Image (tube, rainbow, N blue to C red; front, side, top):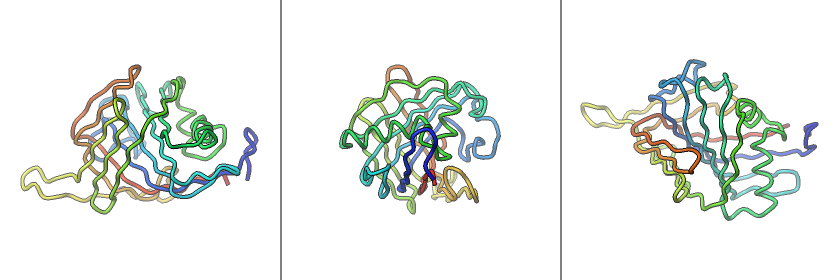
Length: 210
């Protein structure tokens, strides 16, 4: 079903990795307040199949930097989008339109509705490597984002710990592997933060406005 705002049918599916300043488990996933009172995080996406209208989207990578002063649902958030430099002009426009929420789709609509500030987008290389089974990932935008993810480890034995979040009917994912953001750093200029050993998630996504 096309949206009333853009009239464009779309669907994208692929892999997501994200990290934030919350403790492992991230209370935001369960409608609780962020660990530190506010939320600062990043998310990276690799589209493996899909279209935005007549524009094929497979192979496009993009990232989000997201900051809220309090609970996400309380609003006043800030969003900055990074579009991979390999995207064509049409693909770039599609990514930016999606992130405004105007093209519909739960994930984009919900996060856009909680943001009051949309910073100028960045076009840059987006390096995204992810292995959900091993709970390892790397999201790097040179000079802007660095999120290195490893498995959570037992603090006594050092053994890898495995935990998943299952959210039937979740708007972002149905199931995500949890990991450890051993290093999470953003230096975009307007937005800067650094954390170690905080929440990470690795999940598939399949979103549309249909």
